Amino acid sequence: MKDEFERNIDYLRISVTDRCNLRCVYCMPKEGVVCASHDDILRYDEILQICRCMTRLGIKKIKLTGGEPLVRKNLPWLAARLKEMPGIEKVTLTTNGILLPLYVDELKKAGLDGINISLDTLDERLFSRITRRDMLREVKAGIDAAYESGIPLKINCVPLGMPGQDLMEIAALARDRNIHVRFIEMMPIGYGKNFAFQGEDEILQTLRSSFGPVYPAADHLGSGPCHYYTVEGLKGKIGFISAISHKFCGSCNRIRLTSQGFLKACLQYETGCDLRELIRGGASDEEICRIAGQVILNKPKGHQFLEKGIRQEESHSMAQIGG
Ligand code: SAM
Ligand code: SF4
Image 1: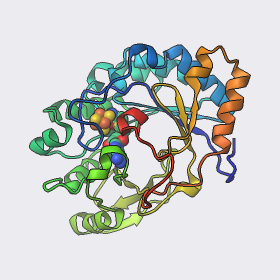
Image 2 (image 1 turned 45 degrees about the horizontal axis):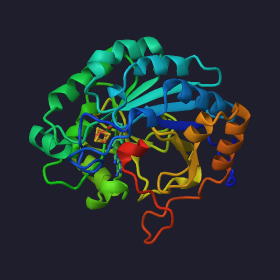
Image 3 (image 1 turned 90 degrees about the vertical axis):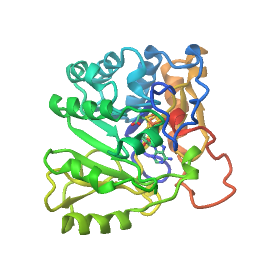
């Protein structure tokens, strides 16, 4: 359905857990977020009920995220049920990749349409500093497993402005394999507020001096706000999700469901509605559609990341919201 600014909302990001096997410094505190109790997290049947309602409101694409979605049991089962749901055209996954070698075959069987793997550096020491875990080898194995499965693969990298983060090494992952690499501007949400901002224009410049000419790509890949470039010498494309330097709120097509069942219309604000309470209170699908429809209709016009003193600003970490 359309919101009050005529944006067509057809994409839902679902965080299936707030737990994670990494502790990225811009996403979580070192002891991890205080995890919600098992009962507070939406059950799979509740997620499916919400998604059925969402298809009636025009949601066609679903992204499974977290925390780390693959630490939740039976995630491929959920992906398979979503894939067979009438009205759902695409189901994709965002993961840190560590558990992919275990689950990629089941995800492939489930019909998953795409995998995004987050990777901010290929330097082992820096990886351990950023993620507070020594698991770069596991992430690389996850990338290989995903690539070999044939499920379309993208790498997501957040520039942190940390010395030694060689973004061009990450870009070079697109050199020989058809993997698209995307740079995501750091958003000042949760722990992200503590990091230096490195924007698209600066990275484009470095791409040019490292690889040669860079051209805007004619095709639009995926369902989101990423815009892509063809870079000479690279097989895959290089994309940018530049929420700060190239604000895209005017064409935002997404809403978010947290692991505890809160439906959020915009990343920056805490406004939305508690669908878990509704479902557990016995609300009918019609009631859920009516209230979720209101959240979509009232989706804020845009973020105000660069302004101070914003009312109802999001206080949860990205691991809790799902990124
Ligand atoms: N654990 C999975 C992963 O890392 O891909 C899924 C959840 S994670 C919260 C989703 C994405 O959000 C990751 O690519 C992560 O780098 C990104 N992210 C976390 N905090 C961010 C911030 N403040 N600004 C921009 N991206 C952020
Ligand atoms: Fe975990 Fe992803 Fe957050 Fe890193 S970015 S701590 S992998 S949820």
